[in-house]
Image 1 (cartoon, one colour):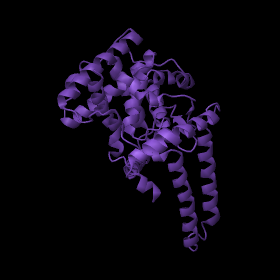
Image 2: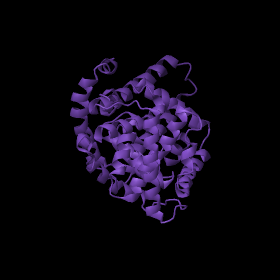
Image 3: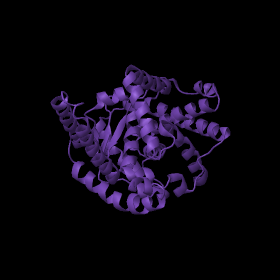
Image 4: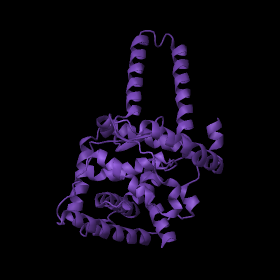
Length: 337
């Protein structure tokens, strides 16, 4: 009840939670858990899963006979998690939208998108050739995941002045112990709201990792919207001094530009593909092949579940929100130019 009431007052949530209580809490959690080499949040989830299975096995014979008692037990546990989720991170879903804080317009024209696509395409090609010295060679990142975790804050320190409140300290980024299940679920990473650890799926194509890392770090700074985290993640990776981080940012944005062109008109992105370096296209194919190999009904279920979870938490675009960051990028370029 309190959560739903506060959802109608984003300015209050912004001032007292997202810019007040939460930054202190998140930095404390990242300080406590960041130095651990393993994900304490994943260990916690694993332990909880074992407890749930043990409880179910113990009560399966009389489960329906004692359905009232079991239902109350389930709802009690669920209410505790609901409270902790919102207290420790989830209230960020109800803060002021970033476009309102920055006073930028998210809507854009087909002409705006075409101009951005061309700009991003040129920069992606340039970086791919700079890294490989051959336009037909796919980019292969030479770093380990842990090396990239150390490099990622560099881009956050270089965010523009109007985004300095999103600067990142007290690093807490981990390889997820559940990377295989995450692959089947269709997730490249996630933020554990109870420990504030950024969890990265280390199995997915490595050239995408810098952007995924920066995206999950954006959640750690207190952004709930997926489009806003893609936007900040892009800016942080783009502003990183490392070429591989920059390539991850621009190739990511290019993919979404092409996707959004297709949403406007079927076949509208076709003319751009002939301009993209073959090495970039090989990276795109590498990513598609990986996720297609893990596409099962499990993926479909979690996509449906997460879409409705986002919509239930004030994110009306659901899974489509991931692609909406292009509007933020176009609007931000207009006020920055």
